[in-house]
Image 1 (tube, rainbow, N blue to C red):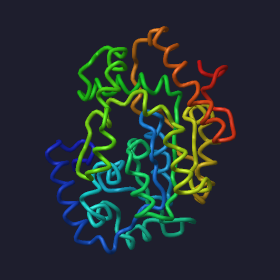
Image 2 (cartoon, rainbow, N blue to C red; image 1 turned 90 degrees about the vertical axis):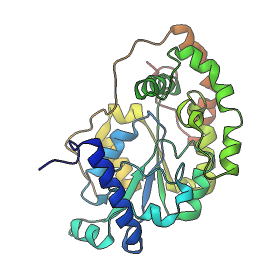
Image 3 (cartoon, helix red, strand yellow; image 1 turned 30 degrees about the vertical axis):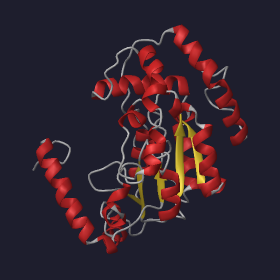
Image 4 (cartoon, rainbow, N blue to C red; image 1 turned 135 degrees about the vertical axis):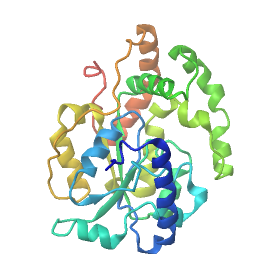
Length: 294
């Protein structure tokens, strides 16, 4: 028998298409997520997602880590979104005997940064809880550039040149997305190396829309150093019973050349006021702040 992970791409695509058709037809008996992992990109979202997906009380979308509904697929409608999630009766059977289940969730590294996603989530899932993973914004930007190059979404090999191009690439794109739900900005999604690391601009609106008690912020550096303790805090926030995954592996990590020190210092200077404002907003020091950055 061919496993899903080893199936040819064409077979996977056919499976996804069939799943969507069936899902939309049975949307009324399917679940909606109780919580969302909303980003940031390249900040440990995959590791946290996999740890949560291993919990016996949780269920995830079919064929997907995330659905990308509230960012790039919102025009498709709520039945399309709900069709990605398990049938509630099946989920209840799967999690029978497990306290706190079933709890559905999905993840997108783009939800937090997309200019419309937070308001859409608030409108469609008013009681949802949000998980946010953050990372040293200097390292996050560099990691994203390497990631986009590897995937073919970036053609500028020089990180420094990509940083210089970013303002012109992003100019006016957020406004276009707000004006047209079908408009997708390639550069806003794949080339926002600096802007995505200005976290306070993204987290403050989440607090305002959802309340602090429904937004939990995790520094990926802390998760890497103390995975079980950090995961325990996540489970407590989500009202899920204690659980220890088999592993807290690093996912999507790749070897890379060191960043130029001049570029590093330039970015550290740029992000310093944003980090200070975020630290004040959260009421705690950030794991990557001076003294623990390297």
